[in-house]
Length: 386
Image (cartoon, rainbow, N blue to C red; front, side):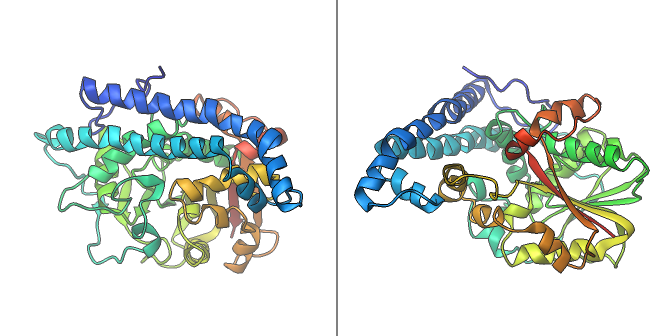
């Protein structure tokens, strides 16, 4: 059985009782079994059975991911796999929530303060529909859930749950993407020394805090729409001795003046917005950048290089994991959207950060060149220079 002992503890991390951790170990192991053992067999089913059945039924060959879905959705093995994948996802949250409900308040009792004075909430902020209409990743209550003054439960559930969800691959602090992106920027632009950094859609600050280590003299601000996420982010940052400001705001339109930030970034955030919000986020990124500043949004790569079967498997995040914008996002030409947001031609570029070098960045090793063969497993970084 795979275990979850690798997550680094901090003052507000809720790991739960022995029984809670046993349930989390089970959910962790089941998810890894589903993704590591059951999922690859879908390719065998597709090649040996579903393709033939589709051609026999329709008289046509499979040409698109839509055709693959029509073929696979009829097969009993895929139905079983899809059910197991969804169930394993729901079990992650079910294994974490009881521990948070039982222990978070106790964990915070006796603390001199649960906020650092660096947290600013906006009770009048209108939560965008894409964040409140659905429980993204099947997390009950969603990212915007707020149970009242001082509530941090959504943050606590997310911090523990995402470690299970990612099988620990983002490192003991769930900060692998932030570590990779920050160190990539430092290595790529060694003379770049931003005075102010904005992290959009920061969640509980997993990817925000690494920028404190890489750019120690910068003022760093993380924004999100979820108040409970931000309260937790602030408490977590305190416990890790990282001075970062957190503010409740919508990345589509913020209050800062033009040119206020030298670096505007986000991490695995854009695909959780919408077709209307994304252009606004990119336009706001451009507006907020000072001359010589850099926009660097890190997210999933495009579907452009995937064959129909690979696209079908990726699109399952939309069908079975409450990711409504996932499929549409991964078909977009982000470079063109950045140009439409105001960036000049020749000032926009994309690269792929390969997941395999996350460990290198965490160990302060020189970042290896992007491996073309691994691009489909990496993260796309969209950069705009002003």
